[in-house]
Length: 159
Image 1 (cartoon, one colour):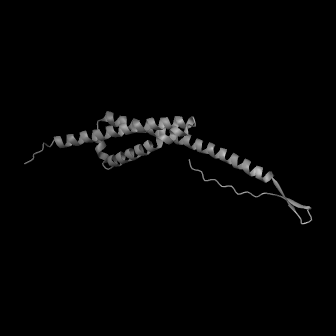
Image 2 (cartoon, rainbow, N blue to C red):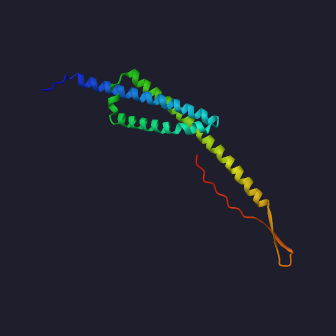
Image 3 (cartoon, helix red, strand yellow):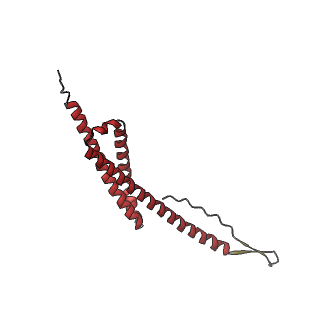
């Protein structure tokens, strides 16, 4: 027959919860470092590096999400974690949120910059085609009218 000490079950649960919080802190640290790398690469227009980080970014986002969902299932359980570790988690989440906002801001700026460049290219292409005149001639060989070429440009852009 299996007997359990009533104090070891809560202690084991607290240790497991402490381990979960430590795992969240580790993922937050990794995710924060990745966001800093991505933000730096975006500022340098190093899109190869940005592209190379995306798979790891998706993996970290999924891990973080899954861990937070698990912790949120028992919100009162976090009260059993020692205050120092709980404060460390709050600071890590605050720092992560700041880095995430900075990353999103830089992403938005890059997107706007890219859109301005695309718009300038399309405007130049439209203007060059509009400037070209095509003349229609009658059967007698006389010029009848000059008209500009119509142009339809579209762009499917994804960033």
